[in-house]
Structure formats: C-alpha cells, structure tokens
Image 1 (cartoon, one colour):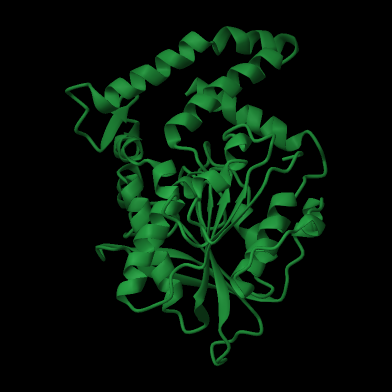
Image 2 (tube, one colour; image 1 turned 90 degrees about the horizontal axis):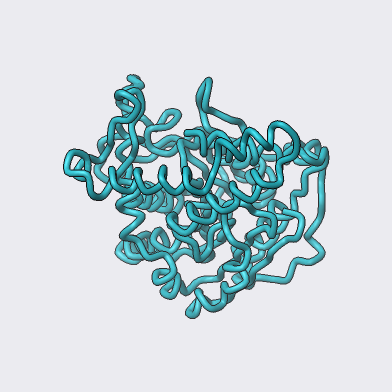
Amino acid sequence: SSYCRTFHKLEQQHATKKKTRTAEATVMAATIAAAAATSGVVATTAAATMSVNDEDLNVTPKTTTTEVSFPSKDGSFRLYGDLTLPVTTSSSSTKKVPAVLFLSGSGPIDRYGNVPGFFTGFRLETHRRFAQQFSCNMAVLSYDKRGVGKSTGSTRNQRGRVLYDTAGADDLVEDAVQAVLFLANHPQIDASKLVVMGHSEGAILLPWVWRQANQVLEQQQKQPIKGCIFLSGIGEDIYTAMALQRERVLEEVQDEPGLQGWVLRKAVTKQKLDKQYNDLMEKIFDDPKTKDMDAIPMYCGMVKLNAKWFRTHKEYKAQEDLVHVTCDCLAITGQKDIQVRASLCEQSETFLKKAKSVEHHEPENL
C-alpha cells in the first residue's frame, strides 16, 4: 500500500509540473484513427502533433451523447456506457459513421476515465477528452468496467464489488468483445469501420480482444475490426510493467529533494518493494490457503485482492498474440511514461509482423 501511495503521488507530481499539459497523444490518436477508419490507410501526422491547454480540450464539438447498455457474455448483468455521435447522425438518419471503442487501463475505471471513490478515487476525464477529439466525424463508445459505475448487475454495491474483485483478464476481454458486437450491430454505426483503442492494460489485451471479436464477427458475417490503436502498452505484459514501475519508483525516490526525499528513501527501498511483490505472488500462486481463491481477503478482510486477474494475466502472452493482428495499427507511448517502455513502441513493426500497416510515435514530452 505504501508503494501504491508513493507511486500515485509521483504520478500527480509529474502531471502538475507544468500548467500547460501536452495533448500530443490525444490529437495524434484522434487524427490517425479518423484516417484509418475512413480510408483504411494510416497517414503520417507530424502536422497534427501539437500542444494545447486544458481549456482547449474542454471545447465541446457538435455531438450528442447517449447512455447505452449491452449484456455480458453470459447475460447475468449489463455493462453501461456512453455512446457519443456527431450531431449529423440522428436516430432517424440513414447515414452511418465509423466508430472507436475505448478500452480502459487497469483498475476500477468508469466510462469517463475516472476512478470512483471518496478516499482512493481520482478524476482524469481521459475518455471524455478522447470522445471530444474523435466524435466530430466518428462515434465513440466508452463503458464502465464490470463492477464499476452502473455495470454492477444490481443496485447493491456488494454485487458490484464481487464482479470487480473476481474479474480476470479473460472476463475483461469478453466484455470488450460484447462492446465490439454492440457497435457492429448498431443501426447508426458503419460496421466495416470499427477501430478499437486500448490504453495501458487495454493495449496489452487488445490483440486478444481483436482475435476473439473477429471470430464472432465472422460468424455473424460482418467485417473484421478495421484498426487497432495501442496507447502506452504495446509489447508489455502486466508483470514486466510492474517490474518497470518498481524501478521507476526507486529512481524517483532517489531524486526527491529535501526532508520529504529523505523520508521516502527510508520508507521505500528495493528490498521492501521486492519483498512486498514476492509476498503477493506467494499468496496468489503458492499459499495452500489462498492459491485457489479468485479474491483473497487482505487487511483483516477489509479489502479483496483480485488473484484471478493476476493469474489470467500470467497465462497471457501478449507479444505472441500481436503477431496475429492483420489490421491497420497505430502505437503511441510517451518517452516520459513512467509505467511502460517507449522502447517497445519503437519495435511495433517487429511485434506486428502481419499487420496491414503499422505506425508508431514516441512523443518526447509525454
């Protein structure tokens, strides 16, 4: 828990060092995705790279946003989200538009890109920002992850916690496939122009989603997914990302000045972080009392550790799955990203050997 608090604090410091936040990835991803969805060709977008203020991102284009829902694969609950459409596309219009599906990173993230919670929550509005950039001429779908927001299957909070605390990577993939099918069968969406954009864990699971969704789309005699966008996550897996994050935390703690830095260096050491990690892995994989539990009680039962999530991610080989992707692909990872490696983004062509086209960007100031 001390590791998590320290890491979150360091992330906040990175986000607030400058008053003007660089939105290169937002504008670049939106521009290239639009090109990929409408023409099938990923175009060079050096001219689209730009810096904007937060105020510029708050300008709402002419769109309409509607709450929608779709069933889980087993039909036991529904997932809720927002579908944003250009205003030129009304319910009575026969014009169909391309669509982008947004897959969230790890954690209890809602349709807006926020983590709900009084003590542990934080508000980033990333999904809303992307919707604003994309939806001038495209549809955008983002949804509450299972067990989050309205995707709880019940009005009781306990039901939602169980859904979230026992969700494996395979469950998250199933939910994403259901979202793809929702868009593919929506009367206002051009099913031949679907793009899926995954951020962090969403990017790691994206090849799995692509493979599973295309199998079902083929059965329904529909076009396959047209494009994939990997934001901060291509070539990674959860375990290599966690190792990198431990290294980055230690680097940041060493650079922290003053009394605060001295205290952090006493509290956060390599030995302590490694022990926390090894103890965690033992509970998940080796401890006879807990190795078969999907959710392991922690801190006297006050919180649950989602062991199934760790186990299913351990089984998934993301780099091996990337080889099978055959659509247009875009990868973006900032060189200052403290959670994943930009060097892997530079290897996108190597990972995506069968892709129709590959473009990657590593913006310097992100």
